[in-house]
Each structure stands twice: as C-alpha cells, then as structure tokens.
Image (spheres, rainbow, N blue to C red):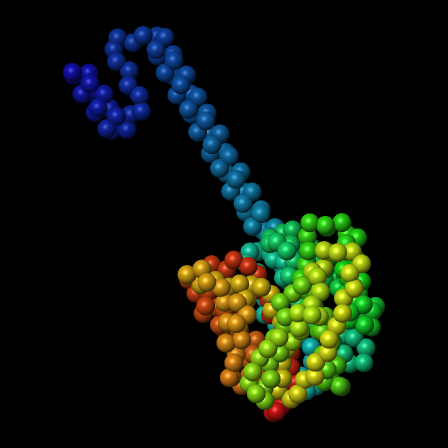
Length: 304
C-alpha cells in the first residue's frame, strides 16, 4: 500500500516512471533503454518540426513570389481611350489563381478586352493562365478578325497537350470610332450590357453565338456578334467567382442576382463594376472566398 502511495506521489510531481527497491538490473536496463529511445524520438520529432517549419516558410515565400509574377501578367494600367472609361478588379481565392484579363491595343485605335477562367485553382491553374496570357496576346495581334483569333487560340491550347484542362474566355474588341464592340464567347458566362438610357442590363451575347471552352475540341470555329454602345452604355464581363458567390445558407448569387444589383441605377462604367463587387462582398459576407473573382468592363462616358 505504501509503495502504491509513493508511486502516486511520484507521478503527481511529474515523474514518468517509477522503480522500486530492491533494483533488478534487467528491469533497470530495460527502463533506461526505453527512456533513451523516447529521448531520441523526441529529438527526431523536434528536428522534423523545425524542418517542416522551414519548408512552410520556403513555400510561403515561393507562393508570394508566384503571386507577384502572376500579377505581372495582368495589366498595370487601364487603357486611355477618349470618350471611354475602363474598369478591372481581380481577387484570387488562394495565393495564386487561374482568372485572367488583358487589354490589348490593336490597329485602328481598337482595343481588345479579354477575360478568361482556367479550370481548377492554385499553382497549376496559374501556370496555364501565364501561357494563356502570352498565346492570347499573340493571336489577337496577328489575326485582325476576333473570331479567327480565338479559333487560333483554341488550336494552340489543343497542341499544348493540356487535354485535361480547359479555359472559358470572352473577348471584346472595342472600336471607339464606330462605338461598336465585337464579341466572341468561348464557353464563358455572357458579359453584361448596361444601357444607361433605360437603366437596364441584359446579356451582351446570346447563347446561339457562344462557343465551346478553349481546349475542348480541335478545329472548332468560333463566331462573333456585334453591339453598338450609346452614350452611357457599358459592357461588364466577370468570371464565375461572381455568379457562384455563396452566402451563409449555401445559396449562390447567380446571374439574376447580378442583374438585380444594377437594375434601376445610373452607373458610369467604373461605378457599374464597383457596384457588382460590392454586392458580391455583401452577399458572401461570413463565408470564405471559394473561387477567384475577376471583373473587367468599359463603356462610353457622357449622358444618354
């Protein structure tokens, strides 16, 4: 009984083992060996923990660098076109993402505005986004017809061998002289066209004109449509991180939520984009961002 009380006291003050007298050498050796093994395991665990922390720090630095590099693929400045205003907004769900946009100056004062969404997230999507950025710029600069340019871009994606990846993309070529916009849709949600005169919004591209995502079918021929912008009219394109924004009840904003957010208001092209971003933030309040969010838009300034 006394021995049991002594053991309890020893354990209470932090002892992890207890050896009673008279000592038995075999038991003593066994217990010492056990404690040495535990100590070695403790030291190995501490070393592994330090290595893991260093690896995490290296990964964090690498991802921060990748984020900066990816940002360099996006335009640093908005286009400066007389009579027009431009807007862009980008937020990745992780350190790097797969959403992409670009402004490409073309001949005849035209400007190509592209917005794309690479399937997937993270580093792989970001790498494909970087390739898409270079290929898309090449195609838009070498093909005067926007539909032919996107057809060529699709062929380049097919040849890249990334058969398990695809990209949705919308291309809008603005002619500020004629006030027209030529649109090509590769499996992307239709851009929104906002009419300042009636304060209404609708789809800029019909489903009949929309084509397949890039990288899905070799030889697919894309087609285009054209819209005219009156003073105060705007075009706003966005990735599905906008329409699939989710609230605390797991309900999605969807396209009808975007339309409802701008219906009846008087917006400049910049204010239109800012309004949609604001609504997405409010709708998804309390939920972590699950997908990349990108918006790009432009429109005619002045009263209708």
